[in-house]
Length: 445
Image (cartoon, rainbow, N blue to C red):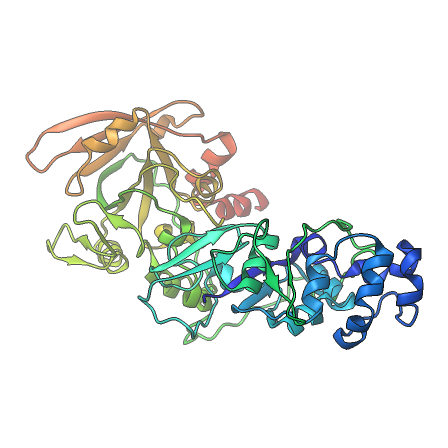
């Protein structure tokens, strides 16, 4: 059976052993049975099992999911738990939940992105092998969790993920189906009904923040020029005051294009501090409408098909500025800064789509790019990968004022369309300065 994951920001609700931790306070009728436990101690299975019937009667309620787990059930599927923050990690360790999850067979991961963003060294499935995972992570794009495009990822609640991990089958319905306990008897899981927040408040955990020096004027950052992980950023070039003439189309994207398609995560994350290296993943997941393939675009100069990053680098080296044509909700998903940094670094000047995901649109503006949308979405069909585009009206760039785009076809014919934007005055200054950081530096001088 495939792995399962549980996001622990709702762990207080999903796993409710804390009912026993505070039994002497909340449930006086169970006081005799629980008298030899400290309120905040982890309750061992062997001790709890002896009191099961007494506790069940004296609490006068069905046992919760985690209470039944403690009684000897083990997960039949691989089960991973990712704390949503240092605060959550410290709290579940303090209150005993982390150990309970480990005893069930779960793996409590570090409070980091982990499998949610592709940092999963998966061993049970080979790449290309069809399988299913169920998670409570917030995104399930193709290949996101394990870089396997054949992994079918379903998103549900932490409670359902936990129940399926215990049952070991997707066919399990916790509302109607039974499990078999260690004693051989069948039982059903009950819906959790516990405190939403820990009664002892959250444990803040370790404070790992390093405060910057009060005076950084004498500080110097040294980075090895041969480092493959770190690279000092160079300011992007300013707008030259002219319209953007004869932009080459790097790729016309077909269908969904998330920030995972634009800048893949997983093994690429080791290059987060090296813009040039991580730019080698630019748009490698996007589908090219010209041939229906990922990471395969036509070089307009050589007429050969090759990887998207290689083609972008070729254009940059030869002074050819380029544009991306996108579909609906371009840039949805993670608010990934590199998805905006990379196209700017490799010579991109504009991204023209039917619509943008809001955060990605803003990120593009911050890097001095032009995120533009078709005034008429049907104009997407007028542009072909072999065309060249000229964007006019930048000298009079103003909020709410559309820009003009001239489509130049290889046969010499032209079409003119309008492009909308959502720039305000401040963001227009970012564009003129080359980026938001450039503008901030200008204002300090």
